[in-house]
Amino acid sequence: MGDPRVRRTQAALQSTLIDLVQDRELSRISVADVAERAGVSRSTFYDHYRDVHELAEAACTAMIDDLIEAIPDPGTCDGAHAATDSLLAFFAHLDEHAGLYRGVLGPQGSARVVDHVRRRATVAAYVGARRAATGHEAPTDYTAPVPHDVPAAFTAGALIGVATDWLQHGCPSSPAEMAALTRPLLIALYREDGRGQA
Image 1 (tube, rainbow, N blue to C red):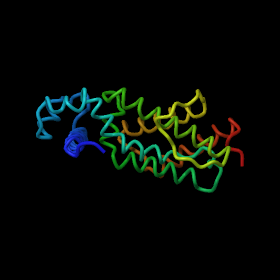
Image 2: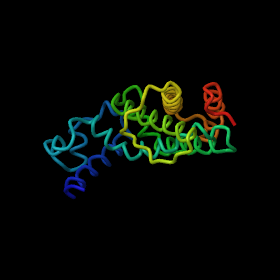
Image 3: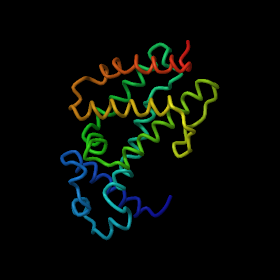
Image 4: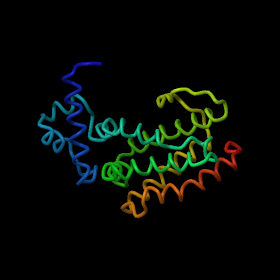
């Protein structure tokens, strides 16, 4: 598991960044800001991270995994309320941490974090579709390479685009309203692709 002191320092830096990004755009947060607030030296910061963007990616990873887990399984889009429930969880998670996600996914955020989210979301959509097609349950390995898959990439890009737009507009609709608006679009995509047939 590594040195507990290293884990504590990294956790302190990540927590500090999450606090800072609630009140300030990520692009306006410096290494000095984070180090000072966390009570460590700049050299200690650089012992762990190259820059604030790498720290942001590390700080968001666990939260991003929770977020990605809420992306609906494409194979369930026609099943009862499964897709709506998953989408509700997805938008509720975003709403709960709106300041952080607005900071890292917005125009002044981190391209690395956006790519990190997009890649993981694509994997989740791809694996979900394969799981639905084969019935094989397996844990999702977000680090695994994924073949070029247009529906999976489209799903990931569309959900991230909708989520980012919603966040940037101050979350004007409730998570339930966003789930209701998004569900028919996903159903249409997977019916067209032939994966969401009842």
